[in-house]
Amino acid sequence: MKRLTITAGLLAATSLSACAYFNPPPVESATVVEVVEEPAPLEVRVHSGDFAEIQQFTTPGGASVWLVSEPSIPILSLNMAWKGGEASDPEGLEGLTDAVTYHMNEGAGDLDSLGFQTRMEDLNMSFGCSASNDWTSCSASMLTDNAEDAMALIATAFEDPRFDEGPFERFRREQQVGLKTRETSAGFLAWQAASQALYPDHPYARTTSEESIAALTPDLAKEQMRKLMVKDRLLVTAVGAVTPEELAPMIDEVMAGLPETSTLPETPDIVLPELEPAEPIVVDLPQPQSLVQFTGPGLKRDDEDFFPAFVLNYTYGGGGFESRLMKTLRIEKGLTYGIYTSLSSGEHLQTWGGGGQTKNESAGEFIQGIKDEMEDFVENGVTEEELADAKAYLTGSYPLGFDSNAKIASQMMGVRQDELGIDYFDLRNDKVRAVTLEDVNRVAKEYLNPEDYLFVAVGQPEGIAAEEFETEAEE
Image (cartoon, rainbow, N blue to C red; front, side):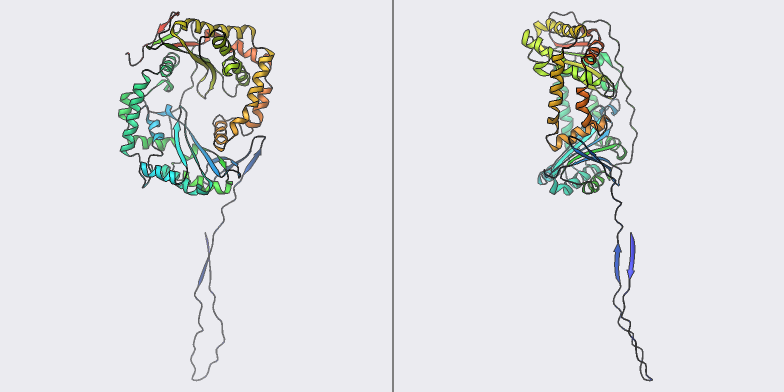
């Protein structure tokens, strides 16, 4: 800051005589004028696309931001994400990152849990955090008129989180309930069997236990928070009636209390093992239906065959009633209420899988029907009509993901996390349209061989020879 002092006085001539004395003129008091240096203007790069105009900039504090200014809706939606998540939990402390995210809106500074929640209600805002294997994320929505106060509250959550014993004990109780619930959760048991069969020694395969939950403490959670939420790994996306110049200081206020950096354990890549021809794994669970899940190798987002696989998946099992698996196994054979497939393209694990439920007595026929459809894709591929229908739906439905500020902010964050580039929204539909029949049929031959898939059935399935899987509870 520059300081400039200006002294103003009255300069007057005085007459002198033998009997006169000097009487100094009155002097006006000093006036201090403070000249404040204006902050350097933000360097904003603007990408004008078909879906939105995205403004890309870095705040003075170093946060990387993508912003869509939308003046017509007086709401600001904000997403923040940091690389590093549940896979970074130390062995024996599974659930630690979940404890962090649970408590981010459970009190900060002078506000306990009730006070924090009440303050959010007063501001008509929402704020919460979550975690996945590889990411820790927070999101917020607020009225633009209240944005400064709302962001100040969020800043307190990052700078001075409380992790009080009361909410922490509530977290422990909820986790203990979850441990009991998952003993009869077909979805969890299927995931557990598949992960133990495919990547048993990887952090992704670890789960919470009574021992790990009991070992968690508020101090450990606060320490983990300071490792996860740091300045140099922060990504921000925002949509609302705000300019970059208005948003930047609010973001910097939020991140001011975060550490500069931290070191987290490296997460190794997973290469799925080559499966020997085997019968499905069966997890015994007394219930009238069997959940069947199947998992095979997938593709990374930057793989040249990702979009052919994405289009193929619609016809395979991702297109609801338009998919082959649904038409054959539900409509024609009546074996299931629903069946789906999806691609999972994480940084360290890529899979292509799906699942559905069927009566115990039809489980063998259901599994064989899935394999038969896979083999038909491998041998005969898809038709021109199926390809045209898939591309029409995937391109036509895409704008539905941009019909609210929160959805746009979330879409942008997904693109940032997958490093797809700021022009992805403009290129995505063209990539779908460019997929050819030759492309999808080549991918089907490579990826839909049923011998490459692990099948897991949870229930009391009939009609299959199976490898039994013991759950931790049974052990």
